[in-house]
Image (cartoon, rainbow, N blue to C red; front, side, top):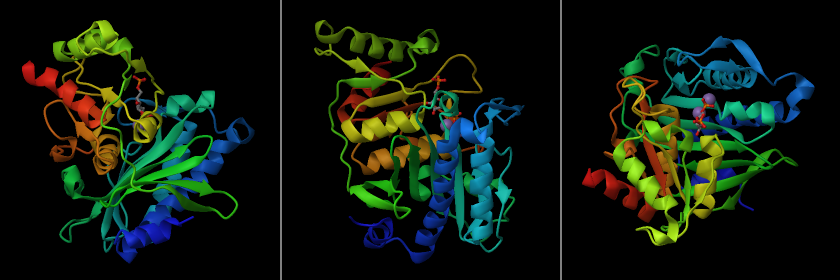
Length: 324
Ligand code: AHG
Ligand code: MN
Ligand code: MN
């Protein structure tokens, strides 16, 4: 089976980017090990602190963030980091050529129930003019990403990654410690009958989303003319992995609760990397009003609504938005 290094070279990734990705993944392998130790290592449960978004941090959020922060800032390749668990950007090497944004542990409410969790990341070029503590260089649209991916800490540890030459899936082979290519050039089926949304938020959705989901629930007697199934992992990495593997639509739509939070998921380290993976696999990634990767960020922890997945199903959902 092909190794990650060979696939990255074949896709034309420059050497320094390959070395940076390998460094980042060394951190993810350490997270995978810590996660697998669970209660034996005392890593489950919450801390007494909150992150900048007002969420109580799990011990594994803090541990994962520290692992990635240390390994990336010591690497020399990185000028600055932005992380879900850091209020501000973290300056690294002033001569570093890359910016890395990450969600160190996605789905952290799943840690205490031994369910799916993962790390999501994106990489962009660091502009020469940028000072390492200047957040403005991170405020570039997702179209500027040079690589993005996630590591899923599931029954197998898997990596989904793109450098803009297709989305590939790799599985961690613990016998030698490397990621091996197990599915090249993922293609998300264009049609689906599976959707993912947290339906407990229904009363907060806009009318177009109410109608769309209503029509899916109406099944073959409704306007869509077929029965749908629903899944919700409560970890975007788990839901997006399922969509990449067998199709589907994943939604965390616009929500009326708080005008300051037009969605739940964060643009830089959740929506954008998943959008890049989805588009490279032939799927769509939209906010409901435009392509996720074209949103111009105004701050590093900005939230956006997300509709991601099978092309024809995302288009169907957007049809309801266009009518509105
Ligand atoms: P995080 O654990 O990094 O804060 O992200 C959790 C996110 C996302 O992974 C998931 O899809 C969503 O929150 C789940 O939200 P609900 O609590 O509404 O299920
Ligand atoms: Mn997350
Ligand atoms: Mn997280």
